Amino acid sequence: LLDQQLLNQATDNGAVHVKEKVVEVQEQDGLWQIKTERQQVKTRFLVGADGVNSLVRRKTRGAIAKKNLGLTYGYFATGLEDQPTTLKFTAEIPGYIWLFPRIDHVAVGIGSECMYGGKLKATLDRFLQSYCPNIKITSEYAAMLPWATDPAFFAELCAGENWLLIGDAAGHADPLTGEGILYAL
Image (tube, rainbow, N blue to C red; front, side):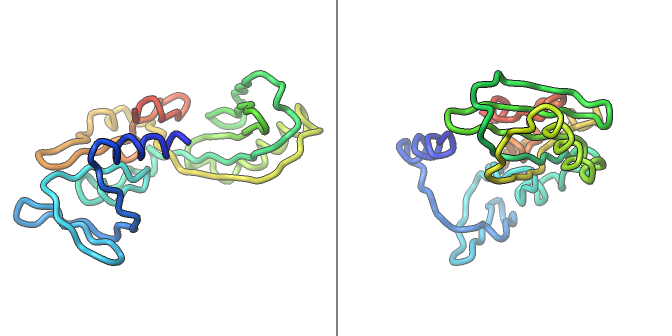
């Protein structure tokens, strides 16, 4: 819903939404050449709002180093909608487990640095077995996100003369929680 509202605001104010995947960007003669699966367009200014694995970032700054990336793993479930928002910091790995109740389901998950990715599911499942044994899982999800552990990361440029990185592409996320929507906005 938030993504759709932002898209609507952009198009209501003159942006044109092209529903095609960008497969290449390249700077040539002061213009950015943007190639999709069906066409090629040019622009003077390029904004990278294309997530943690940003193509625009790779072309302008280079990819985010693995040491500054995190992983999340979680479930959408029912049975805990009346519980308060819960955060549990684990002794096993840096990061935390969350329980975010919504109107008709709950999002439960865990996030940490990439190096602990292999432990996320087992750690989360142990938590759920101990604290929420009656939860009914309806689906699962996983995602990468910026998780800066190197202070030098915050000194990296996220804009140039004719380009700008925003949101996860820029690494704009809380370094403690991984939350990024507020930073992106």
